[in-house]
Image (cartoon, rainbow, N blue to C red; front, side):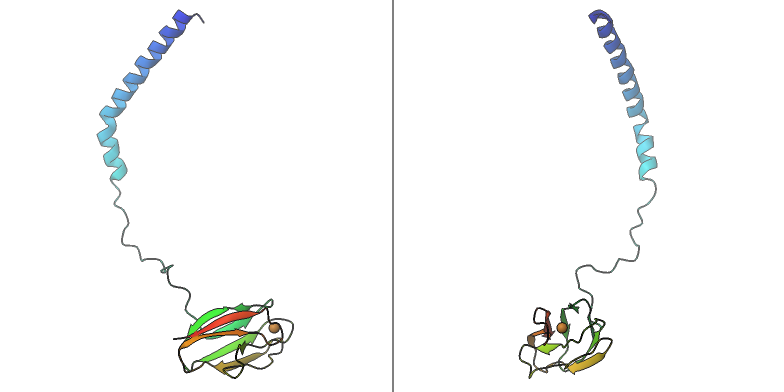
Length: 139
Ligand SMILES: [Cu+2]
């Protein structure tokens, strides 16, 4: 392809493109009205608010050497049930054990305790495995 032919080809291509573009621009209003025609479905039921954490259901499950949930909030004096789905015995014991303590919960067992009546935050752990920790908030 000689430079002249190439230039001619480019010119032709340019003309074609310009033609196409002007045709397209001419048709644009119709197209845009078609595109925007379907009304946006704005009033669908809003999804669960992701900002608020899952409300505590009153049951802490021990699994795989961890509390689930580890951090949760209850009302003063609420009953908290602790379910041990692990394979060894655990406890859920306040850092100050006089505050609350489930005592030993055998594998597959369940125990409960009464949350403190005083609002505040109460760190707790497993009496056997001190790396198992959580935070009870009374509010
Ligand atoms: Cu444990």
